[in-house]
Amino acid sequence: MLSFLDFGIKDFIDILLVATLLYYAYRLMKESRSINIFTGILIFIIIWLVVSQILEMKLLGAILDKMVSYGVIALLIIFQDEIRKFLNTIGAHQRFNRVLRWLRPRHGKETTDMSSYMPVVIACMNMAKGKVGALIVVERETPLDEVIKSGETIDANINQRLIENIFFKNSPLHDGAMILRRKRICAAGCILPVSHNNDIPKHLGLRHRAALGMAEESDAIAIVVSEETGHIAVAMNGTIRERLSAEELESLLTQELTK
Image 1 (tube, rainbow, N blue to C red):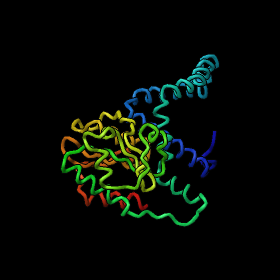
Image 2: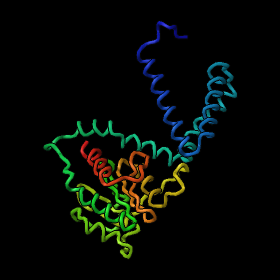
Image 3: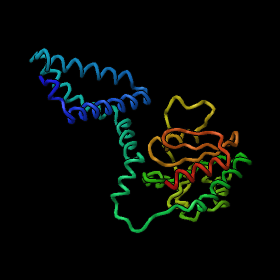
């Protein structure tokens, strides 16, 4: 048994890391409606520790040890989507990205000219007035190669008329998402992952669910123009903001893309 004097900074960090891991696992399970499974796993771990470490029951402890060994593989299979989302969240976290950018070799300072994105704001306002549905995704640190492959390659400068023509109701690409990469229109007609979050308001349609799904799996910014209401919404960091004005949309893009 460790005495109080043996408790050092490493033990404190160890406990803190375990508590943080459990907290994020709890949040992840709660969002995916798997909280009962998470609770059951915790109860099983506590029973396993009591049987094998405290009571030292050899036979039952050996059985539970085997269950734990094979149970890890089973959990990886059952929760593969949640684990993928968790790892994506870590990789897309702004603090980690800042560290990675600092570690990368620098070939001159990169700057974001917001004038390149002003046609997006103007096009969204025009489409909102005409109630033309649109879904525009701005790639940031997380690569969207798989999403881009699902659509048609455009590779053109960001242009207001081009954006409006692509999302025109009779356009063959108007139902999919447009991907912006490095101040250019990279692709259109792309298929996005749809969010299965049950807390999404019922009045939001499939475009909003797709935008939120993209924001849950990456650090991208997804802009939605509602075909039913003409309202503009933005999904990012796993959340969605509705009914944005042109000024609010411009301010949000300026704030997020110039970090």
